[in-house]
Image 1 (cartoon, rainbow over the protein chains, first blue to last red):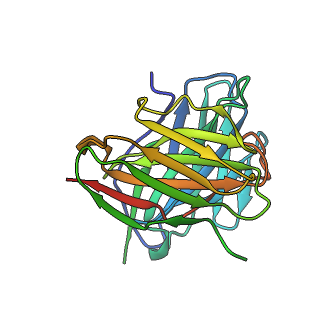
Image 2 (tube, each protein chain N blue to C red; image 1 turned 90 degrees about the vertical axis):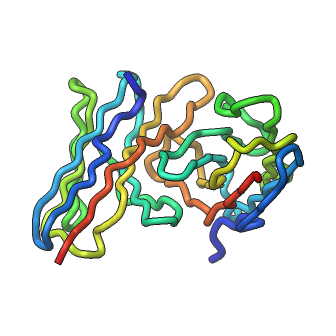
Length: 112
Length: 117
């Protein structure tokens, strides 16, 4: 099982749609979780952190399910500008503080 | 303020040559990371610095790859005897604290696009 797995998509949705992405991780001891966004041929940028209690930032909602080892991202009222690749990122922890493991990303395309 | 700066932005080199990639992190950021991204692929972790030491260099793919950081600032990634499979975008990121901190997101540079011919 890969450390961080995501459905690569693409997800093609109309403007205004609600879309959800899931991401699973293999290390049950993982400590922190994030969603990053990467536009085509650009560097990744932090979208939001994912807290145990779940968190919301405007149209974006992130959830963490430790028992099933997955995190999710929900985007409501999709905009054309939401088109990008969404990267699930996990810190597996460890003695060296570990490192951030990036999923391969889920591609979202929002159409007019 | 200034973000993470990487140079060169593009590098074309012949197979077998050595290359040096430079990263200037955001001032005051103690953690610095190198990732590699091949075309159409995800980010591949290479090495992580906390200050000038590298507690995690598990991602370096071979002994042809090395990296150093000095003055808790600039970092250089060196690839010796480049091979065609080294062609990728090399991304540097920095953060205020280590990777486990929720309040310390990674800030990425624009990357160096390396092409080995």
